[in-house]
Image (tube, rainbow, N blue to C red; front, top):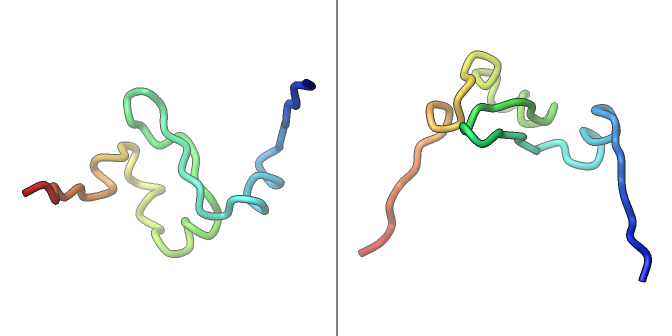
Length: 60
């Protein structure tokens, strides 16, 4: 079985995944897709994923 490795530059990655969010272990937003930036322009000013998005507990 062959192992495949893919390498994308930012432009290619944005073309394939325009709504991506890249976060690190500390939940800091490192990068996000161009289409996501259009609908959520505040992501540029919010470095932390938990501050940018609300989480709701739906357990009963």
